[in-house]
Image (cartoon, rainbow over all chains, first blue to last red; front, side, top):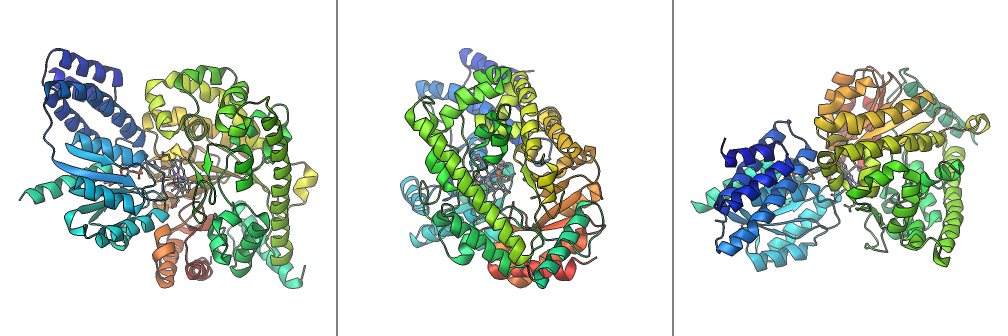
Length: 215
Length: 424
Ligand code: B12
């Protein structure tokens, strides 16, 4: 098995020390850091699929997120040193909406989106509508992601979408909402383009949007 | 008590007792719980509701007066912050471990805890109180926790969590503790008054109520934060295991103490079967690799001890527990209430049959944004699908309580639905 395959496997098996050890070994051997990042994407995909199939659970996603983060933290300085950057598939502004501080799900989405090649601007938790609007103006993202676990978050999401409309930015971005209490009902009420209770499904939707945009 | 009120009391008591003892009642009982709905209902700010006990009593009373339920479930004007304090008293001052029940803003003002945020303090006046938890312990400290949990919590956790007790030998800390005690007396007085008014004026039966906790949830909520607790399972499983072994007996003691009432006290309640509310948090999140050993077994020990003590554990399974439903079959038959959030109740009934009393309700989004017609329809559908063969309690919505923003007309529709579609 190649080191690349072995690393992907260690990540998928959530063997943190082994995965990090291999990543370090690969960098020391002078391997292209972009290839390592690409492996992170592959590993994240497999883990996402396992989660969708009910083989993996939230704790697995959280642990996987830690490993992915750990490895990309080792890889990033190397990229800088070499002056290369990764091809960005799209730009995502994401945050947990106003009044809500749950961020475990959102953090998983951030890690998986980064692994999938998105540039992610994470606004954190309890983010008021105006901060989303400002971030759109400043970063010009393709997609806005909103997370919320409280039922009151659904109202915050609606207010955020309204604020985005009011600022005349609605046509510039696709909007996806996620989190435990979100459903079709909520999606229509909020006026988002898509909803999900599942990070990897969310990533797939976002990648599809980026494909469509390219055409 | 008027004739009408005592008839109501008898009717409700009978209904609840039947469901709790495995007999089929005349219809499904409706037991709601509330956070801030009562404040909205009588039009007071969340800030006032969580700090002025008179207003709190008035608001909750108004809700139970204007809507006809079967038992007063939990009504809490905020979020809990005292669990570590409760635990340290369990050996030497067991009465303090259970009576220092403190869920209101004044306790936050006195203790200045870092667990919670409150309307009119860290939050705008009409935002619901929040438990935010945090990380108050490093992974290296698990051994110390396991060695002697009471010592560790007293000496390390408490000064970190409660600003006012940061320096335990300071005048500030002594003062805070005295004030805390005084406030507890005030707050319990208000709760007592509420219970009495609900009984005497409205005919709601009284029932003893205790609290329990899943040991791994205690670590996640109060010591290590949810995220780190989950990763600790992969990184330091042995340490977590040892900490759980040390904490579980403590939690059992505390939880049992909350419902071990002397016969004379128990006698004073209308319904003499204590309920022990156990809200679960990590239940749906922990991978099956760890679930049994780290989550379920310690929790099961707590549950079984409570059942042996004559109580009915009232367990709130947060999130979607569907993949783990079979575990519930390991619990003593007919002795627990399984209150579900996002678990599919129809599936739960299929798997669990009459093994436990099932409790649940409809989508919170529907309660808030739906029309009364739609709410009625969904609730009726649910009731018809799951009420048989008995042993079902309607909770209104699928969260731990009636969502704060529920439209009053939708709450009325829920009650209608139980009347029409909950009959046996
Ligand atoms: C852990 C937890 C907490 C932790 C949060 C820690 C943290 N930093 O996040 C703590 C203990 C701090 C907490 C606090 C509170 N909580 Co809480 N909490 C939970 C719990 C148990 C799990 C939530 C979670 O993390 N799930 C796991 C993640 C991975 O799932 P997820 O967020 O759905 O994310 C997945 C997908 O939805 C998707 N996703 C998520 N976001 C996004 C965004 C995009 C763009 C995309 C594409 C995808 C996506 O990706 C993820 C992976 O697939 C839930 C119950 C439950 N099981 O849902 C209650 C729950 C959400 N909490 C609840 C409540 C009420 C509270 C408090 C208000 C309690 C209180 N009275 O103090 C406070 C809230 C403070 C606030 N203002 O937010 C209620 C909400 C009720 C309601 N309907 O409003 C719940 C449902 C529990 C209950 N009572 O039923 N809580």
